[in-house]
Image 1 (cartoon, rainbow, N blue to C red):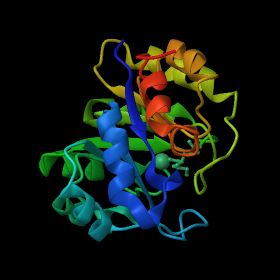
Image 2 (cartoon, protein in one colour):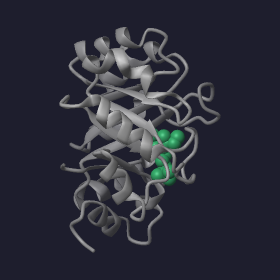
Image 3 (cartoon, protein in one colour):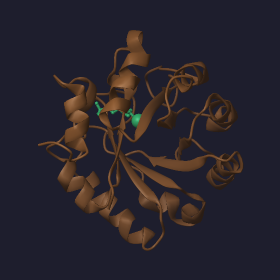
Length: 216
Ligand code: DX5
Ligand code: ZN
């Protein structure tokens, strides 16, 4: 399966975001992972639609917006308008998940649902046909640079089995490195988020090429 790389700007220099995005775009990244945190669903605060809009003006990467917010319905339209391509909401936060996912699709965007490590994949069982992407959190959301939770490999494999023939992407997010990449893609993940492993690498462009299997 073709693996897509979605570098997370959470680990980039926020004072030089445009350059950080350009760097991974030139190196061959597929998506740009934008972590949106509201200080309520997660104990941290990051960026909102204005930043997405500003970056949109200078990048043609697919913008993969991960909404770690308590009330996603309030913000979906604003992110769509700002230039998001994929909008992912947390199943734990969306009170009417099916409604939120169909709304995202009605805006012409790809709909994603994210699960915290402790949330069972059964939370997605009845919305599989409303999903373009499932995001399996491989750390507890809120911060970059955390350690991958090994039990998540089985969770990815279980979800891939449940998806069967459906063309739904499985994205993994948190603590993904070149060392555990093989394990998680073999389990069935095909969209890889990497924050620290790209932006904190000595040579971020080389890290992108390595994740993409273009260089050893
Ligand atoms: C965590 C975020 C992740 C984070 C991943 O809440 O959702 O996207 O940026 O960072 P790394 O790859 O450093 O774990
Ligand atoms: Zn994320």
